[in-house]
Length: 329
Image 1 (cartoon, helix red, strand yellow):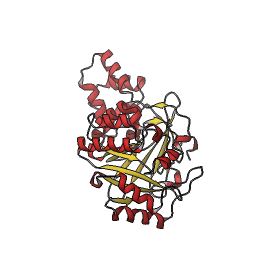
Image 2 (cartoon, one colour):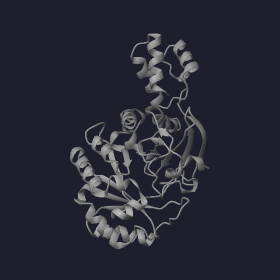
Image 3 (cartoon, helix red, strand yellow):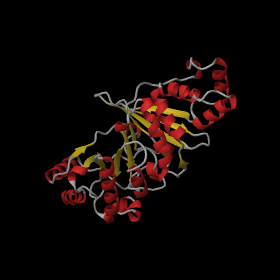
Image 4 (spheres, one colour):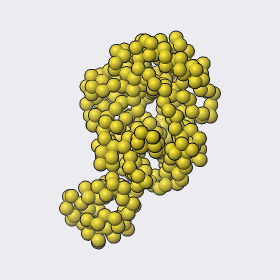
């Protein structure tokens, strides 16, 4: 819902200030229509139904993976495509992967989103409406900003959305913002907004290798990014999660794991999530399970906590690095 437009309508009607809170409470609880909002006057519900769509996003299609993962494709009112994902796990987690931009301007060359034409930043309401779409299908309890876009380039809207997520069912402790290393945003996160988790998409510990994968490294090189993460760690007293995509012959050699362990010091400030490569058009192939296991074991032997991420939604192109609305199934 366009929350700004909601306030304008309520102000024009002379409604009491608590009305906006009532509407939001219903939305956050999974309401699908204004008719369900029974503590609002009938005339107000009718006016809102006529003048204000329940969502800023138009659902285009939704597909379901064999593992239960759901991917939704939306369009904004100005025709921008967005994708969001719901992942369900046996331990009860229902985790949303939300987009902060339509497309992404940073063109990481292993990522399908980076090959899309960049549209624009999303508004707070457009971010929240991705979450509310899935909330109307059931409870949700985790959010990762790992969908389309670089969240820290749209930080005002992302933080505003994070402030509202607890009402939807997602605590601050279960909200993660992922960045490619946008240093000004990391610095702001150290002092602004709720105490969310921070994840860094690193993918290589050598500067030349990382620049070949992620052009942003030329602007914010690894030492500068790690220093910013450590300042965030000191301010927020939380571990930084390192995302590391395993690419055969590019970043998966044992000696590269040793270099990574040297970069990530002090070791208790970081935890590495090794990500099996999910197929996208391009030159890369994924590391073998044996190579991934060996890389993990080398990190652990050098004192760095490391795990291998469980891949979800690969068959519907909903896994890490696969979101690209133009190719939505």
